[in-house]
Image (cartoon, helix red, strand yellow):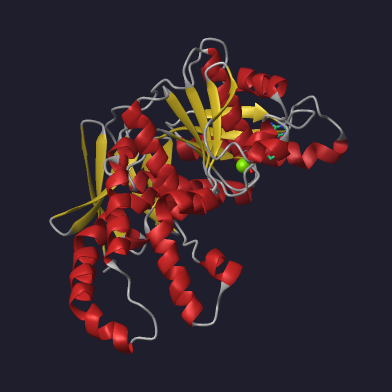
Length: 392
Ligand SMILES: Nc1ncnc2c1ncn2[C@@H]1O[C@H](COP(=O)(O)OP(=O)(O)O)[C@@H](O)[C@H]1O
Ligand SMILES: [Mg+2]
């Protein structure tokens, strides 16, 4: 899964990765779940003809397919009952027609639809690798937290709502200004939920799913990448590469770019320090846009030097995890090497900073822990466990 801020190069890198995988004999699907689809453009296909076809996997080469999620089509396929109900409720408030249909596209439908496909393709063993060209970071975070949220809804709210409505519908429908949802609405939800079953396990298994964060060597972009890293770790996804795209090549030595060179070098250093031990890949700014097959191959060549397999599992260990033991919050940090000696711990803003010798690790804390202070730490088998407590 490739994710990152808008415009950093997710689509280009995902498409290039797809090209490389197909060349390595994998049956590969590149699936775009960013509503701002540009996968087709990336392959420089005849777009008019093309956008009508990519809502289903479209073969664009040997062993290579692309799919762009089309929410209108998905609604017809999966969300009929739910959106029909929402539309009917809206109609009673005077909102009708296209506007109601537009509003009946609820947040998350795209992400959930994409997950259903991932689940389905995996069950069918239809592809060897699926490359997800994900939406910008914020939506991708919603994407990964969806299964847990839904699980909670299905366990706690769904049965209650359903039974409650069964009981009150005959009376309520006479007095309520709109029809209450019918049983088929609930059946639709349950059916959808069934299609998602197991997808969270797929996503959290580092042997199956990895996240590659795409960033540019700019401070604002980096901040978002760091937040994403924390969030993905929090949700148990493994980030196995950070790709710094559009680095100004050193050949560019016009004085105009002097400051850019300096700031990019500094930020690159910061990136390596922050994400260690996750490998950082660098991709230069090309002299042209990455459009069409040949340029995607060029990009793939830089991204994956000869012999490198983009689908290889390179990291199975999560760099840090958050947990709660006997009511106390804990941060567990995996250290890249076993070490003894002094360990320094302090807070800097919302980050926990761990210092071991000359090694320094910044760990962005989830909101539930951001106000806490490090209290105690112990080191066992390369895992540093830091207890977090309320400040006294
Ligand atoms: N390394 C690069 N050098 C030159 N142009 C690039 C590079 N990476 C991406 N681009 C171009 O930048 C634009 C945005 O890239 P894109 O992959 O669509 O980003 P995103 O999917 O993150 O929004 C595209 O026009 C693409 O061709
Ligand atoms: Mg894109």
